[in-house]
Image 1 (cartoon, helix red, strand yellow):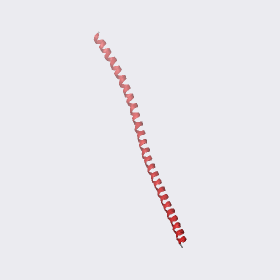
Image 2 (image 1 turned 45 degrees about the vertical axis):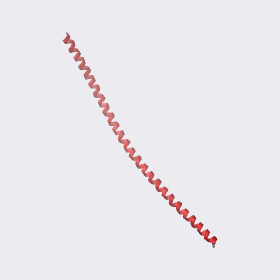
Image 3 (image 1 turned 30 degrees about the vertical axis):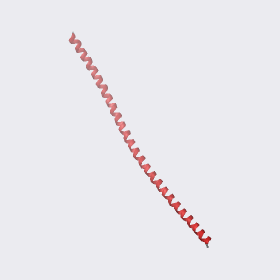
Image 4 (image 1 turned 180 degrees about the vertical axis):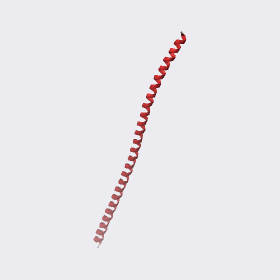
Length: 94
């Protein structure tokens, strides 16, 4: 009878250990899935932010090109104005 009780207790212990293992394994899988979903969500947020930054950079590049063209026109205009001023000064000195 003592051996049968011992075997029964050992069998129950193995059953409890196996069920505990399965429960912990399932929780680990759920945690990994949750963490994976969080990482994917954060990556999606980062990707959206990077796309917004790219759009802003392209807009800034267009503005810089337009500003560069305007500066070139202003420089040409001021160069012509300086030439006219120089010609007027030469006429006044004569």
